[in-house]
Each structure stands twice: as C-alpha cells, then as structure tokens.
Length: 565
Image: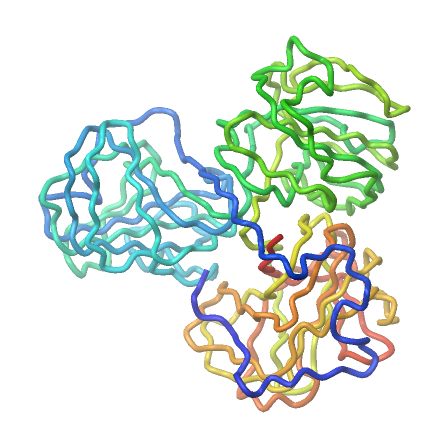
C-alpha cells in the first residue's frame, strides 16, 4: 500500500457519455446490488509465522543496551499464508516484563522479491515490488506488562496492503534505548535478519535469529494451506460429488463476513464448466469420524452461499495456484469460535479438476450423489486446501509480470481488460481500480479526458467485435486524473471511481482504462502485465471506446480492486 494515489481534480470532473458505450449507471444489468446500504464491517484474521521451536530470547528491537538499533526481518509469502489489509504486527515475549516505554520507534513494511537478506538495508527493499511504507512513525511505544508467551501488539498507524504473492520485509528502527530490555522469541531462519547498533549505518550484520511474528489483518485472504501435495479430483468433477469439509477455528484464526472461497490446484487445470451449490455453516465437532450425516454436522442452520450457480474454471492455471468459486447468494458471517463446515454439491461438470489436499483424519464426509438427496456419506481424511476472503480487503490479480503497457497516454489510447470470475471470487461494490506501475519512479502528471468503464462480460476471451465483450457498461470515472510523484516500480496507481460498480461475482469483469482524446500530460506511466497465450488467451485488447473492432492479445494486466459488501 502506498498513500499516494491517482485522483480526480476537483472541478474538472466531467461525467459524459461515450459514443457506443451505453449509458452510465448500472443499465439494469447488475444483479448484485448494495445501493443505499453501508458496507459491512471488515473481517479480521491473524497469520502466525512459527517454525515450531523458539530459540533463546532476543532484545532486538526492544533493547536497553544501545541508544540506537535497527533490524530488518524477512518473512516469505509461503510462511505468512495470507494477504489483505495489515493493521498490526506482533512479537512474542520470551520472558515476563513490566510496563516500559521505548522512545522513537519507527516501523516500515515493504514487498520484496528477494529470498535472503543482504547486509545493505536499502538493497532488501524497493526491488520493483513497490515502495517501502512507514507504518509507525517515531512513536513513543509503550509495551504493557505481560507474561512469557504473550504477544506484544504493535498497531500500525498506516494500514499496509500486503499482496500475499511477494515476500515481506519488516524494518524496525529505534533512536533511543528502552529503559529496560524486553525479550522476544526468535527462531532459526538463515539470512532472515540484518541488524546494526550504529546510528546512520547503511549496512548491518546478517544472521539467522529471526523474531517469531504475527500479522493482523482487517479484511483479506486467509490461506488454510496444510502443506500437503496430495491430489483429489472432487468436488468439481464430471460425476455428481457431494463433499463436506471441516476446518478448525484455530486454523482459521479469524472471524467476519466471508466474501470469497478458493481451492488450490494440485495439477494444471483444464477448461471445465460446473453447476454447484455451496453451503457454509458452524460446527461444534472437532472431527467427522463418528458422524457422517451431512445435516446434523452443523450447529444451527447452514447458509447457502451459492445455489445452483454455473461457472467455468479456465485452462492452464498452474498447480499450486488458487481458483475462486462464485458465492453470490447468501451472506455467511463466521463467528471465529466454532469450527467451519464447507459443503459443495456439484450437479453438473465437464471434467475432473485436481485439487490439493492433506490427509487429516475426520475432515471430509463424501457421497456420490446423482440425485442430490443423500443424507449420509463416507468419512475420510481429505482436507482440501482452502482460502477464505474476509470482507474489507482489496481483490487483486497479481501475475508473474514480464511485459509493460500504458493506460496513461498523451493521446487517445486505452486497453480493455478481461478478468475471469475464477480470478476474482467476490461479489460487491467496486470503489476503485488500480494498475501496478512499472516505471522506476513516477513524475507528477495530469491526464485529461480520462475514463474507466466497467461492465460484466459473458465471454471467456475477448473478441474483435467490441460490442460483444461487454454485457453492460458503466462509465465509472470520467475527467482529469493526477498521478503523483514519488511512486516506485510495483506501487499501485489507484483510481477512485466516481460511480462505484456493483459486481455480481458470477460473471467475468471487463474494465476499459485510458484517454479518449489528447490528455495534455507530459509523459506516460507504464503498467505491468504478463504474456502467455496458454494462460491469458485474448485477455486484453487495444482500442478506444466506441470503435467497432478491437485487437485482442494474450496478456493480463495486474489489477487491484477495492471492493466491499
């Protein structure tokens, strides 16, 4: 996250219609609607990086022996297993402490592509994945009294949007010694810490004593990845499978409105079309070993989150990546205390899709249920890897970027982008659209005649006849936008929408971004995209609104959508 965003100039906003673009507004086509309703509260969850065995306590960063300390810690995306709006950082006490205040504490967070820290602080951050962000600034930080094993909570003054794809660097600097040291648990992780006690030093010593950490999120995606690589061809298959999976509250470690569900692939996907029903509900059971009755496993009534919904899984999504399934119907709020049941019944399917599971006893009830009426099933140990999206965080598509293009041009120019439902996963109100900047740094620039047009789409690949690519079109932004200076490569250029768009979560999403006439800007800002004929067939197209034909090509723009329900 970077606090610098593109924005509309006050007084220069001109809401106008484009020839051939349809009317602004929802055109009666958006089946999902939250008009007049305030967004629901953000869900919350915690991801813990715990390698299993704590070593002896360490006083960094809360040290009284030196006036100055600075340390960087590296945590990988595979260790964090989550993404979204990070609001707090925690370290665990290794011994009891009395209350103490550590003066002038600063914390910075940043995405990175490195897998091991170097001795130079600056080389570990801003590696093309975005700016390092100061989330706690020169704070007199009070650590309350606590017992060994309790967590020290460091609330972030500025939330940080962690993308869950890149690794994370936590940079902590303290200008004045603490009155007394507070020891925290560390674990051995090679080349995951660099530290110095010399004020102003650009370098430090690299070692393997990394602090155990918790990352607190308000909205975003909690991965329930059990580390296995076993395979199961249900629940989305050509037969009529019905499964019910149990997840423990301790594995989720969160609560709130669930707006998205994703399964992890264990093999490259083939194109598959499915019709399915999904139920979510609470359970007091810790194992399904002694109970194989679908209905009685629930504590209370389940919520039908998807009722006979049809969707498509695209081809050529690699093993290890995640597929979002649409849940546009009932809204389920997880209470964070009970365990969770996820029940999928597939009534129609074209191919078997191989999903990743880990054997854990008593986690699945299954039935081959062609009539959809089976009351009971068989119990086994298939725990599907699952991702839960909690309301309040962004919905992003982050690719392995290897190409660039511009949606901020000095002349009439733009791109139509297609995002498939399996890449998105949440119904809700989209309030901003962002692209990930490729330029090393941004210069200040104003782009006149700028528009963002959003609509649903029923095509899985764009076609040359542009009228067929949109079901409906909303002019979500029209006017002059300003890109501020100081953005780094990998930062998001975010465009707040003046007309939010209600995305139904079932269909694909089409977004056109660009200038409709000469912009008067000084230079172009480039946005990242990936190229793959197999993975992204005809997913973007060049052309301006109103033209009869466009030119589809095999790319995918990175996108960040702020969405709430």
